[in-house]
Image (cartoon, rainbow, N blue to C red; front, top):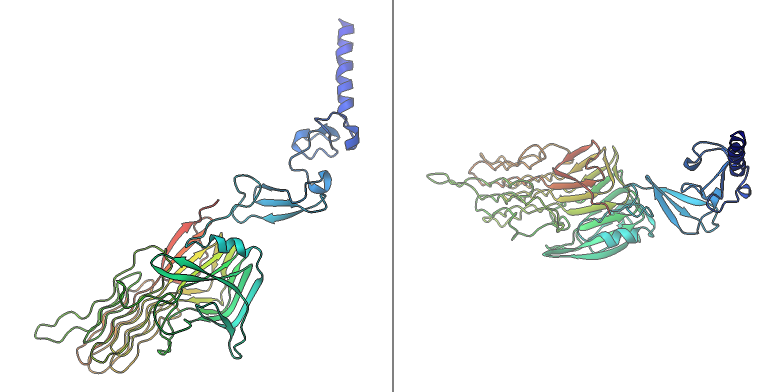
Length: 433
């Protein structure tokens, strides 16, 4: 019995001695070639100086790696460098993909997935004081120098193509977007970046306050269902998130309602289109206010609008007695959207008497009414909290206010930063892949 016990103890001691190590060369078992010197990996159970299988999380500097091979654990992607002994780590904004070999990503709406893939190898772009048109040209204010930014055109069904600007990242200090030529059918615009998009100044894509430049890019035509109705005593305001305000009532023995405001838009964001025009003044052929732009921002990491940033797609004020234009439409898609500054898609007020209406305000207040010839006053523009108002009075007529616009925000968790957004906001989560 004693001999058996001695034999068992001797065998146990021999196994422990064979399994002990100070370096990998001490480990002769091909199934356990790794010496966990400090007992820091799970296979050793916290015991220092034992031979184990090669840990899955062994760093490249210790265990080596296959050049260009990648592994993703938790929220960290590690890619083996060409030396086979080091790796480059990247934090994954959306976590790891299901195959554990890459970061998860998402497919942006309106067929912008190819543009997002192209952005990974594009340059970083900083836009100072620039003008941007929907035909793909960006020029510096003052000297007209062209700023080279890669752009493509992405077709849409039943809407104009999207002019898509592509960069690894965008920093936008001050920029104004206007259509290249007068007329309807201009292209909505998208900015797509693999990295961040930061707007720290005024990014103005509202319908121009100068009535010789009438259109927000991608804004809709007078024939759209959301357009205000033209009226003899004043046009109705353009519709978008809500219906537009009505024009002045008709002075008859029994007063009749004025021209109707445009219909509210269905709450969807495909295709990408802008805001809607008000109704014209039929008596004097005065033009109505135009709608704000259709803009989409797509980032693989972060869309940031700090306290100094303003993103505006407000509607235009109506011509004398004409309806105001509605605010435009925005689509923001990124793992994180941090709004500290202002996003505004306010409607323009109607015109009245010989006065033009006011463009959608850069804030949360309605654009002011105009008028004063007799009892005639135009309707104010709509905001996130206040509906556009109808025009009043019979004297020379007045236009109704344009409706506020719409914003879609999609992030990893369906939330966004706490800044001011004057628009009807729809929030959702990105579809990871």
